[in-house]
Image (cartoon, rainbow, N blue to C red):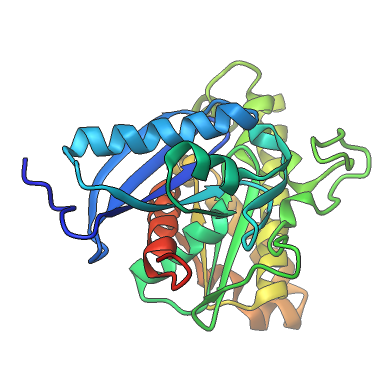
Amino acid sequence: MTDRGSGRGVYAGVDVGGTKTAAVVMNEEGEVLGRARRPTRPGDSGVVESVVAAIADARRLAGITAPLRAAGVGVPGAVDPVRGFVGRAVNIGLDGFALADAAAAALGVPVRVDNDVTLAAQGLAHRLGETSLALINLGTGFGVGVVLDGAALRGHRGAAGEIGHLPFDPRGSRCGCGLVGCLELSASGGALARAAGGRSVPRLFSDAAAGEASSATAVEAFCAALALGLRIVVQAYDVDTVALGGGVFASQAMFMPRVRAIIDDQAASSSFLRDLRITERLRVVDDTSSSAAEGAANWVRESSTIT
């Protein structure tokens, strides 16, 4: 295979999720040369090993021998992208970890770290030609990445978009973040998996559609929580497009009509909500882990701080 990463080298982007780590390798022109996925190992050393191994897999599968110039890494949770410090990422077992430094030491190249959904939103906005976009990613948790006027919104401490940890149910369970009844405990792939109780999530939806009472109750609770999450995102950021991503949306036909109906019912009695036209902004998108990995690779490729 011809090594299209010749010249000055290649750039890697990695998305570390709660269950899988996805990597891409990109050349100087922004062309993706290789992709790979592997299971995520949680914890400080486990995440670093997952990043290194996923990049190695992507290079090997694509036959890339050109040197690696830099890597970008996306993780769930609050991240200081300047220092590459992960404050707390409960779904992958990080809590106060200098991931950029540790990954740079393991790879031997500069590494930058950011929130995974922020990077996915950047990658998706670039792909769609959008300058005003919010990406809601329903994976293990409820992640939100926001692009306004073409720039990613990160916030003062890298916590912009952490809507999944807003209080939703004061009688709910304690979240891994330490709070009680967070939104993502009701509106996420993890929430559906818990409600399924050993069944697949598609089976939960089909049982609910067939009228099985406990399944129908669980799906209705999920739809109500997701509808609120969508409202919060639109009211907080007023973006043109709200992209919906994550494996849960493979079953969108089983729940999105109900989510839209809940929002429309609320708008029927509120001119404020009606004027926002929330459901008209919604767009289901394909694999967001690819968007996050591509966004991470583009970030380091285009960054003037990487020399």
